[in-house]
Amino acid sequence: MSLVRCVEVARTFGQGDRAVVAVHGCSCDVEAGARIAIRGASGSGKSTLLHLMAGLEVPTSGSVSWPEFGESPADRARQIAVVFQGPSLLPALDVLENTMMAAVLTGTDEAEATERALAALKTVGVTGLVNQLPETLSGGQAQRIAVARALTLRPRLLLADEPTGQLDELTGRHVMDVLLAAADELGAALVVSTHDPTVGDRMTEHWEMHDGRLLVPARGGVG
Ligand SMILES: Nc1ncnc2c1ncn2[C@@H]1O[C@H](COP(=O)(O)OP(=O)(O)OP(=O)(O)O)[C@@H](O)[C@H]1O
Image (cartoon, rainbow, N blue to C red):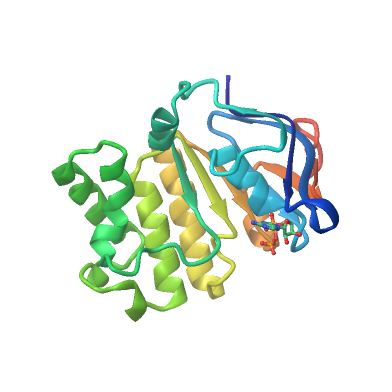
């Protein structure tokens, strides 16, 4: 069964002359355990599609459903983690608090969330930073903490929007190692938008976006 099903989904921003159709009539399924890379030029709609899949954007038309996650947004929030493209840490919270926050807000006991967050920070290699505020971090460190926050949630669906875009090659490879290992361990599906062909090479399904339109090759097709 699909974790996410998009049927003829479209998302338009703005109105009238200023309307931008970011996503046009996209239909796709993310199956349990999938490893999907979404490639496409800047502005082709990758982030918007990931946000629709996460339930963070509401489609202008069409439908997004989560057949395995239940109807309520609260149930979904526990099952889906997003690694955002840009800075996403809360400036007033330190690294540990940022890492555990999403899990606590979705119902994980605080002691359990702390334990998970410390383990996730160790996994991404930033244990020395637990008490620092986001303003003291490099872009790469902040991105690794955003990955740790996603892992702390223990989701069944991991959506990562250009997770290596701001990182040097070695750190980027490490972040992908961590995301793939975590997805394996959790039995989660992983969907990554990327411009980096080396990231795409590590995934098993290859989707393309062009001007808001999604091309999903038939299973076993050439990516
Ligand atoms: N909140 C918004 N308001 C208005 N326009 C938006 C908004 N979000 C996205 N867009 C527009 O929708 C289109 C698709 O943007 P999106 O960020 O989804 O593309 P992308 O493929 O992720 O780009 P990139 O690779 O640069 O991150 C772009 O033309 C963008 O300017």
